[in-house]
Length: 145
Image (cartoon, rainbow, N blue to C red; front, side, top):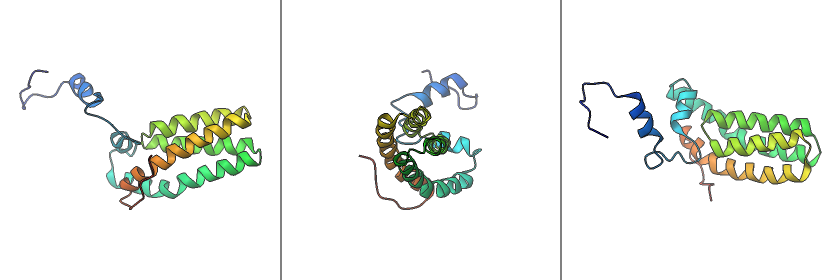
């Protein structure tokens, strides 16, 4: 990429290419740029959202597990949907995909596949929690294996 004059504006296409480069951009369990964007660019709001989500994420996983044990499919589907949307607010792609899959399977009342999908959600949330804790400026154990 040719060097640009610092006084001229950056071409948005060049910026997008640079930011989307896998070498330069490895978001980990969440994408802080997406998270900040979803908070309207307000870092304090993002910190507060992370603070709220931090205890909720594992509670939702537990609630889904209990709902699956009791064959409460609408509850499992609803809570998986809630978890998916919360994870999406942080740009947490792996957690979003896992929760979406679980939401779909719970909607189909697929017992075995739903339990397997719950294990994927548990892993994704365990990996996500330390990153959300960093956003909330709260110490947390590393949960990603």
